[in-house]
Image (tube, rainbow, N blue to C red; front, top):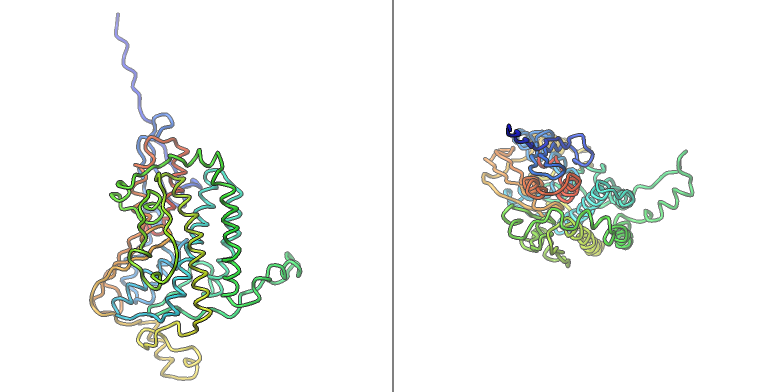
Amino acid sequence: MAATPATEIRNYTMNFGPQHPAAHGVLRLVLELDGEVIQKADPHIGLLHRATEKLAESKPFNQSIGYMDRLDYVSMMCNEHAYVLAIERLLGIEPPERAQYIRVMFDEITRILNHLMFLGSHALDIGAMTVFLLCFKQREELMDVYEAVSGTRMHATYYRPGGVYRDLPESMPKYQASRWRSARDAARLNEARQGTMLDYLQAFTAAFPAAVDDFEVLLTDNRIWKQRTVNIGVVSPERAMQLGFSGPMLRGSGIAWDLRKKQPYEVYDRMDFDVPVGVNGDCYDRYLVRVAEMRQANRIIRQCVDWLRANPGPTMIDDRKVRPPRREKMKEDMEALIHHFKFFTEGFEVPEGDTYAAVEAPKGEFGIYLVSDGANKPYRLKCRPPGFVHLAALEEMVRGHMIADVVAVIGTQDIVFGEIDR
């Protein structure tokens, strides 16, 4: 009797993304599957590469601040912060105290913006629609603060070497009655906008904890949410450190590492806040850490608002080499006009040397390595994005899980491809 030929069993290969809505932009994952179980996941990156680091070498220092906003385009001002800190260290200058408080306040506003985007998109990927809508409602209120202070809702270019672009405005933009909004609705929406920006933020910080409670009511003890996130993408504390994790990805595994506490910059050493940590290192713990971080960021914003109310002062260093002349002076004085033109076209020379400046961005440690050869442009700029490191661990986190769990793991990593592809 002839022997029956052995059946050949082959793994199935499929593409996940880049068109998939849960791929968060431009991630192409090549998955190798045994049935529906992931055996291998190969991330293909570079689809959003814009040569940011190389472009910065051909532009004066002060013209690249806007590029930083476009790296992690959900944590705009935190990216600017690292770049501006690096320039200030090479110049040997320190911004005024009021500017430092404003920077810390906007870093924490940015943290809340980032975590609201994380929570809304992560929940939507897994199948919870309502949370997405509630998160974006809160996000709109903070986006108005970005717009009021810089003129734009996302890419602010608000931080400058030596301080910030301008002081906080005395009024908030108001809704107008229109064909789509009655005068009564506009008046209701404008109730919190009658005072200064600090009044508006104080009202926001008072109301925000209740909004976070609403998110938690919908998700934290939700049976389906826990089934989709508990024991998914588990990373041990030791492995998290070996992989170079930072931010909520590291703290979710139980390691209390936060640059705002361990290597304080600006005025974080004067702030009273806690560093939330997880226990199990799974998607559920990372979700809890980020929700707790929103509450802590809210505390920090409140402390900054109280200090800024009581302490008026300059928001830019009084060094004409690194700050442009005031617009009123520029309109009257020819010398000031020439100075303004030269400042924005040629920038300023930064002393020779190199430095690394890191901030605790919402996703983890965002660092800028800056090398200057004494010219008005960087000799070399290198970004250290947290998402790039986290994406490298994706295969390890999804191996042995189902296809549906890939979506949960991509969501928990909170990756944005602007900073990964650069």
